[in-house]
Image (tube, rainbow over all chains, first blue to last red; front, side, top):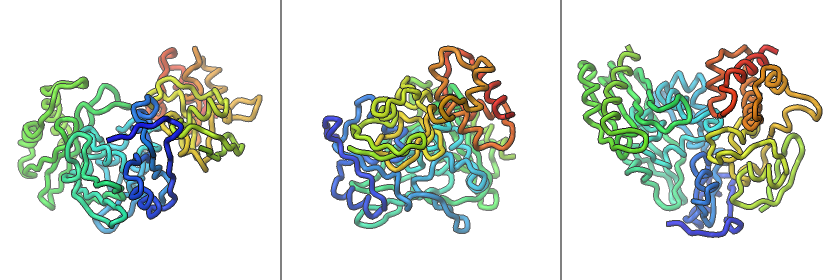
Length: 270
Length: 152
């Protein structure tokens, strides 16, 4: 539901603390939340989005940065894809870091946020497969308090998420461990929405062989395999897809691509 | 609504439309026409500016979000009458044809080189500039120019 208004009447709120943001958002549940703006501003520029209000959460210190606690990493929703490419992040979160590198361009990565990828909940969101294989849990916050939702339950459908009214994404936590990688297929090595994407994680000590893929189903899909029989995994991953024909590719190609990507990911991790 | 920001080293206070992008603010409110409007979707990079030292597409930044920040546009890359090493290199290597993509490329390249203390490989230059499209040159002379500027 969207309220239309003339351009000059749109209110823009720029809170300086999370508390302030939550109070404003509780008061104005109709406000559209903007952080990096790399998705939203396209809609605004082409007059497709004219909300009565925007809530600019780009100045909230509580959403920034990431921290490590044992095998758990907590990433603020304002973490940008450029930050995820830094060496420290690449070491601890290789699949997520590789995924960040495939997103957009330098200009996009400098302001695009993890929270945006989560909130948009696109089946093609590049950070999502890497988060899924790492047991990601999304931290949501509102004036009423905090709650945690496993990423699998947060993504409800194409561009549909489990956010309640006046709720913000504060952070996402993930569990590291094992070897992991990410691949993406598209017509170019930059600036593309994936035709198919795949994150793969193998942790023999924990008996994990896990893949998550994007753009081949209504949401990114998680598949578990037998780490002792990896040769069966490519077919299992492809079979788990429910792709469609769309402007970027056919269902048949996507299914085929997933098997190929799984094989490549497995050989990368050898 | 009013925003206060620093543009190319100068404090500016501007009355803007709330839905205006930073690109619109720069061009329409501040008459800084160097940043170009080609796609308005963050695909072409011709609107590239630096915000607090980071290169971004100004068409994807809400004007209100620029409040309190420092913006560097192509006009601010070098003092008046002078050229930034990247600009000089672009001229020397024939990396400018129609010139429409040039401001965005120069801003992006300058930002890239600012963060490097070694000479980049061609692949690294391509990756850094992957957000900037050029329809004229085929990118060969652009890559050469950026490399030459790095060597300075």
